Length: 596
Image (cartoon, helix red, strand yellow):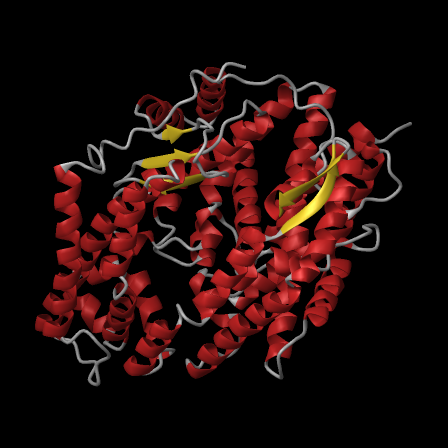
């Protein structure tokens, strides 16, 4: 495959270059704007109010503060994205790194200002404020959320102290995990020679077509993690201890309550989703059994979970990739196809693999309604799927164009909706025309992803819940973490997977960051599939609502937004319907690989 047509993105709509006078002027101006915002907060007394009375004069002040805050966030988003785009595609760009570090230092106080803004408005009479202010009415969901958060704030001095301690406590433990895992290596035999590889390369061998290679890599990995398990256990204890202490002081009822609010869902929705996922575990075990048969083994091992099955087919050129995306998006709507064509024509995508460029993929908003997408195109269908996924995020950004930054606070639970929807459009079209071997590959690729997002993430939720429970009593040792991880994996994967991976608590950085980071991925996948099922039932009715739904993802909780489509996320039936799409894929996969 020729890679000559693989594109690099165009960042000049933001600034001509990092060295341009335009960038320098805006960089200096936005740092000054941060200082002015801090000064205005002092002038207007933006902090918790002892008297929540609201009159016309206060409403005018609130309008000004909210307007200035939204404008500042918009300007900062452009500069931060511009710098991140440069650094993610050119790790050697020291000037960009220096500018980013300077900007991060200059904006470090925004966290405490945000806390004060939440306290100021959240402690006010919101009904009275909205009577006086259209801006307040436009931001009602954010304000109602601020009211809840304000009720769970410590004193301003304590919040400032917690914010100051976070980098040297919570953040330091997370950085320790990142640094130690990045430096971890293991010896593995490849091509008849023993090679010392970084852990990221060792784990990447889990998708190697040769089972013997996968097994050696897994065994090397399992031998390596105990060498750093002691400090990682200390890090995990430190992070969960910090989280529990601050959660308790803020008056939250339990460890998961802050995560539920942050993801715009309620406990009933989470329970309904997880109950439906638990019901589906036997179906996923059927998929695992069928995959073991396709691989010619009696029982799957951990190192078989993402092993390739079937034939991926021919490699794609970039131009063929563009054509496929545009054609399949057009199956949904002319608007979505035109959006894809615009992203190609206007240089929104950096797809060329090269030295100094990060792995993986992402989509970032790049001004109102525009986006930039980073990926590493290798000509595989997997990368076409990745592009469809990231363009879905871009389409979501397009629909959010008229919203303010405070209205664009999209929780993780809803942030994956458009991306998975677009990915599913392309996947279903590919399956329709695929040969038997290609269809096996496509289905296995989707099902292995679904296995991770539904089954593995449920194991992570069980693990993290039990860690929080035990951390309330004392610190845990590394062997206890392994035991809890093993228990959670056995409950979810079942007994037909051996060996399993007791050190996943050390592997996944998610445990060392936000609390209960994992379950929103499950919600996002199943919510998007539920929407896709509704699209298949009545395409015209769905199209009439979908774009508006995407534009309002920051204006309501998930349950409220779902009701527009007739969904009740607090009932297991909605989630069962989403899982039925996965069950269809499992049945088709079984039929294709089952031997007579």
